[in-house]
Image 1: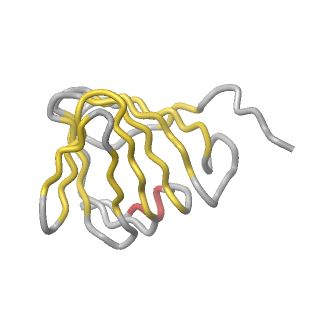
Image 2 (image 1 turned 135 degrees about the horizontal axis):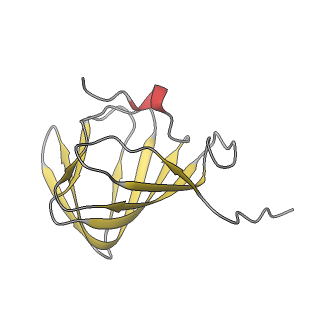
Image 3 (image 1 turned 60 degrees about the vertical axis):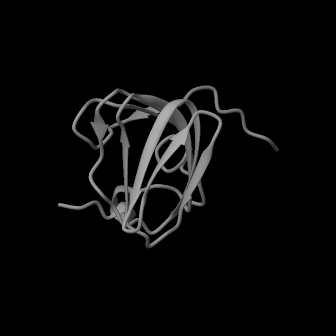
Length: 118
């Protein structure tokens, strides 16, 4: 039977500036370990520590632009575009001009499996 998710849970974000993360599906809001779906509102100038997660992350930018840095290159993902960061790859996210985006992690995001830089 389908399950309605009436509202998200706001979870704490890493980074140098406050960022709003609304988890609709995942370990916190629904107890789902197989995947997580979150809506992000990130301010201009936000930068997150680099990470080497144990999950794939699929990100769709709705508004603004998301900068995605890897060991090989830096991508600027504009509204209407998406990016895939694969498990085990080092990646760092930032929003120099601000952004709204949806992130899907498979399996679900967890602080224990994101492996952020010190």
